[in-house]
Image 1 (cartoon, rainbow, N blue to C red):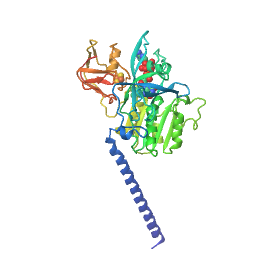
Image 2: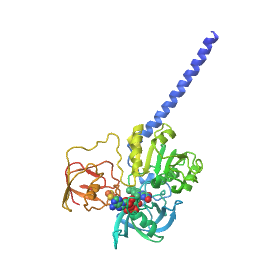
Image 3: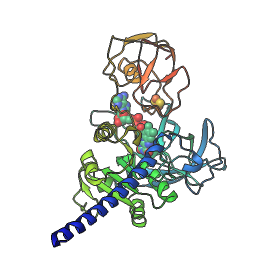
Length: 416
Ligand SMILES: Cc1cc2nc3c(=O)[nH]c(=O)nc-3n(C[C@H](O)[C@H](O)[C@H](O)COP(=O)(O)OP(=O)(O)OC[C@H]3O[C@@H](n4cnc5c(N)ncnc54)[C@H](O)[C@@H]3O)c2cc1C
Ligand code: FES
């Protein structure tokens, strides 16, 4: 055999070995992808397996409101715009577990901004720590008056200015469908914008406590260093878990913020950043932030090819997220009758919901979270049907609808 022939034979041998290696690696990759993919169908997560350590998962949730004492208040950011409230049950009984990502609903009695007297309002706040046996924690951002003459936020300012340690608050049990299975094994990408870090931090810390080796990347966007919360806790988790990657993004770094030391990327968390930083893996994405962030990022992830079942999100207020293939309603003008108010108005396709339609026509209806979470706007449907662009977090009673999320599908008569 000639030298070239021998060389060719050796090269062929190496080539075929490489092919076999590549084939085996690809086969393994497909297997793990498939096994993760197959779990997509498992929508319901059990508190018993998903709450993580440190909690008694046999304690049942309570019905209606339960009184909690504020045991501690802690300012979380340099600007003192975010304050955490630690809550312990007044009855001294055990706390039920919750799924990291869920929220509490508060029934508050605040000073009426219209003048003298009090006003009953309902607001939701995410549980901002992993489940613990001794307390719940929520972290609340103060909503200031807006430039257009809009008043300061009622509940958030009430919490910041009026709620002291020792005060009692009426709270409904943890709820919500936005949560992470902490016992899962698959890689996870968490995305938080501003105060949207609260449920995301709960997910992160619970997931790492349950499975310290799980691959998790967190993209956390704030304006600058003064807005960053749970900073020390995030740094500590990143130090302890090499498999956890923290991507802090400052959209407008301050003069004292140094890239590499205080933050990792200048700019917002957007699809370009995610595509740049993420490998091709079957990630589950969990996003929480302001409405506009969800409205751009969720469709952008779908356009990138992330299956719908792998994108989980929550907005802290009204958000109009248009998912792929979602039909945009059109057709003849629909009429909406508000029976108690004795008003009939035409549906306005520009309105985000029946709640907005009612408010635009000065029809008095109840509301709270405006995001399908608290149930304050639940109204009986006398006739007709409604549609939702997103699945409500609140479990709507049969024959009712949530005005803050629903749109008419046919002519409607509502009890309100
Ligand atoms: C599931 C869920 C979880 C949440 N988790 C958190 C959390 O962890 N931390 C957190 O800080 N927040 C969270 N939120 C948001 C929170 O529930 C409140 O929406 C937020 O605190 C603002 O409430 P507020 O009563 O202070 O403001 P509101 O009084 O409801 O006012 C909100 C805004 O509307 C403007 N406004 C007031 N009146 C009018 C009017 N007549 N016309 C037009 N605009 C007006 C105000 O100027 C203000 O900008 C969460 C929301 C949801 C739905
Ligand atoms: S206002 Fe809370 S569910 Fe509609």
